[in-house]
Amino acid sequence: MHKRKPNGDARKRLLEAARRAMKNAYAPYSKFKVGAALLTTTGKLFVGCNVENASYGMTNCAERAAIFSAVAQLGPKMEIRAIAVVNNHNAPCSPCGACRQVIYEFGPKAVVYFLGSSGPKELPVTDLLPEGFRLK
Ligand code: THU
Image (tube, rainbow, N blue to C red; front, top):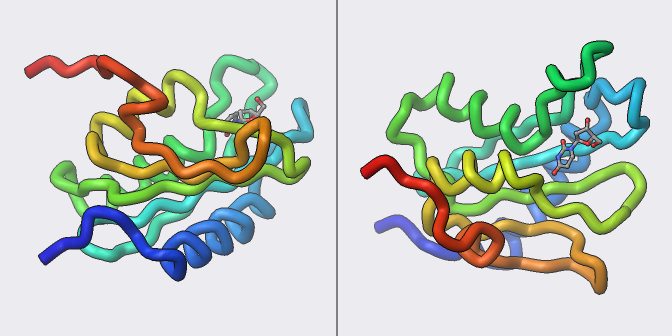
């Protein structure tokens, strides 16, 4: 049986893994390093960091890097149970709109851990992205 909501230990583990991945970020333009870590419904952990480009629009966010790595490793049925995001400024930072849509695609019931404007937050992706787009 797969658990829906991770416990406090899982959250701590995710935040630590995100912080480690953040150190690998390539962010020479913004200097804003981001790390993400996700836990699948089968208990596997994947990490990502942001990778910027001189052609700014080619930048890839940490969250999508983690999700794409999980899909590459586990295949398209991979489901996200929880995803954490951290940054090197300890600044409030929730996943961008594009990442919310991608999280929703692979984890419609996922929980997102991030730093909100008044402290750490834990919200279902559907609170961050109401009425997320679905083809079917
Ligand atoms: N960024 C992420 O990686 N994830 C977020 O949730 C917000 C923004 C990155 C993109 C860019 O490299 C830098 O942060 C500044 O926008």
